[in-house]
Image 1 (cartoon, rainbow, N blue to C red):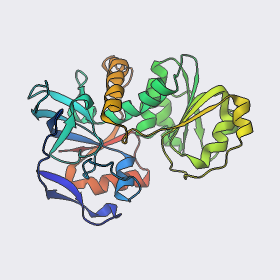
Image 2 (image 1 turned 90 degrees about the horizontal axis):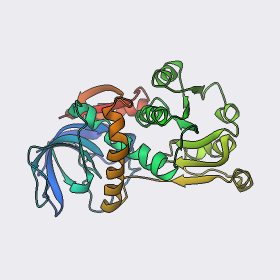
Image 3 (image 1 turned 45 degrees about the vertical axis):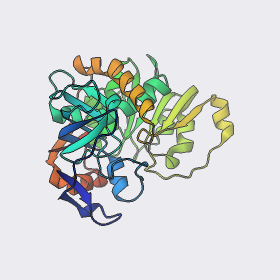
Image 4 (image 1 turned 180 degrees about the vertical axis):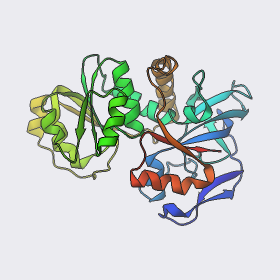
Length: 318
């Protein structure tokens, strides 16, 4: 099969389409012919040497895809079934092996491209904000990076759950995208201090920045608030005044999806399908896709992620 291979360590531009073996199935896996693969910042980090591949996982990039089952292995799945897949790796290829518990039905009426764009963000946002932080109706929900793939999905999920959504973004155009998706409070982080705008008001915070925003996030927290850190674009080491956190009775969690074991991922996939797929079917949440590129242009796709020129998701077609 053809797949994207990195030919030079830590050089994103060295991605090339090459011939590699079709993956052999392990017990409990199916072989999926990939039709589209979602592009994520984690893929960029992997090419830079900053996101190591978990032991035993495919070295090929790609954490989500959509396609057709061509070999059901020893599972009870059906050959020809169209599926969306949460992956530990391997999506930037013509075929990928997927544990049965990480298969998801494609929402009715969705294309392969649309399905491939929602898997990672849906599982990430729901597992952190629904399952972990317990976002409730009438909460104030702060999302950093509101115009990105995670952000555009989280805005819609928040509005579907009846919360007040606040976002940060770095341009008027990106904030306009957030507003069109339903965001209530729009903060240009280059012009305003979000911690002052939301002082003592944010019940749940979804943070992709990390260290740089740590103290400001605590300042923005309401009583009993929960901040979930899922990215470290602003660094890994920050200073935290525990007294301020204690006064808020605040909780800080830091999570990652990729390194979880198969049972945990299956639990998240099942809960995501149960709680989020109805919102996709009802169009309360819709995919926000910037554009698509062919698989061979994976390096160019990741460069766009690096440049910050994407709003929503970018998808590779196979």
